[in-house]
Amino acid sequence: MRVRAGMLLISAVLLLPLAACAGSRRDATALPPPAAASTTPGDDERVERASQPPTPKPTTPAPKPTRSSNPKPASPCLRPGSGTFRVAPGGHAPVGKSGRLYRYQVLVQDGISATPAGFAAAVDATLGGSRGWTNKGVRFQRVSSGSCDFVVELATASTSERICARYGLHTGGDVSCRGGKEVVINLDRWLHADPDPAWRGHLSTYRDLVVNHEVGHFLGYHHMSCPGPGKPLPVMATPYTTGLRGCAVNGWPYSAGGAFLSGPAQPGN
Image (cartoon, rainbow, N blue to C red; front, side, top):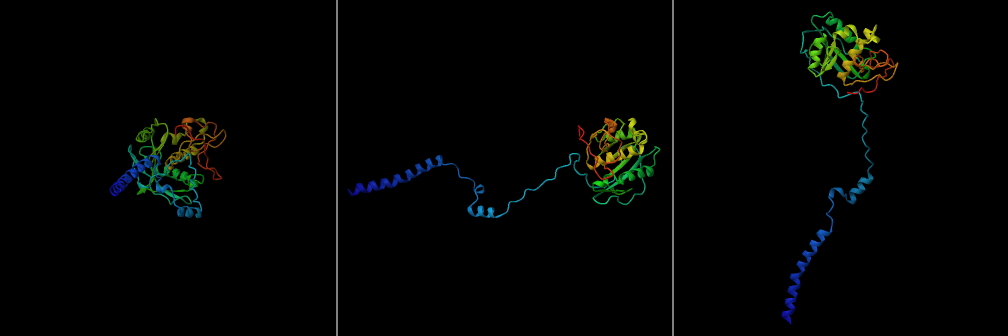
């Protein structure tokens, strides 16, 4: 009897681990996998979170639909890749009350009637105008050497077309353009404005428009359309390709009261 009792005791001891293993396998298949520790905060962490005020969500200002990224910093002034140009001498102190300073250089192609000094004076007057881009918090300064952010070039129709084409802009020699840091003003447009009869007698206004338009592209603004009959034409409109569309002649990005003269985004921007 003692032997049998001992054998039964040994058998029970051997069968116990096997039963435990079998139970472990059944539990592993029946229970879901444990949740990650990071997704289940402990009691202390819950209390700490509850005692803290909620973190306000950052507010992001609505982007301006007619503007893109800021231009790159100043670098040595560019020389046009086509034609021979003269640099306008001298320069002036920064104009504009506050904001980023953009330095620019003025060049005029050789062999045309316009002089570098005369063209530079006209560009200076436009960029420093009270209704110009300085209303948006930028400043301008013309230089004749050193580093600059962009150059303004007056070129013949054929030369302006070649320069613009280097940036993938095919003007047909009819219009001005802005490619990279080059603001290229077509000589025909500078001398005769746009062929649209609405521009007759408004040459000086058209000159303000074309300079403000191409510099506006440099600042990151895209094309706009006429906002409605009788309203001022936005300078970022393209009257030489789409016409005035009922808008009034205008050469400035801002009104006399300081309001930005905008319009619907033009398809294809």
